[in-house]
Length: 236
Image (tube, rainbow, N blue to C red; front, side, top):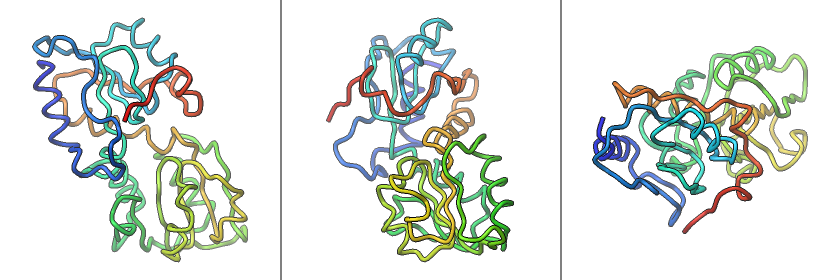
């Protein structure tokens, strides 16, 4: 696939118009030759130095990153557009947990909330782990026998919008990363997956979209959240 066609396909599926943060990096950076063929794409949540080293070692043509930090290789950035687009992160979490009826979390930017089939808390943790791959954060409930009837989801740093999530009155908050202890959050239960664990599945959208192109997920040991501002730059 030609680089220009790939970029157009990605931007059409994941348009800037659905982003919920203004004036953040979006789209293409350091592309160079827009007419060249793209055969190998590396998706990452955070373009750490280790991700860039992996990119170069394995001779990828393009990085697609979720987080808006610019590195010195050909790169596409989608951040909150990827959260909010059709088939993006929010939709994948909604569908995985079978939220019925799904309700947009306020203006649609912060995920989905609604009722689920009544599920014991530990079973819900297992179900969340199927999509997140591991649970590296805090998993807490006010009772070991708690049955969860409703959830609210916010991938990434959901702790920053804890009060907005709490206003949905859901039993359980499922998020990537908190900024307080789960017990202080105000919810009956919290499942904190770990930041990257809540957003890696963006790769699934691009694998479906870019037919004929090899789209790989950066290994977890190099794709982590927390030190990226030391190895790349945020613009905007």
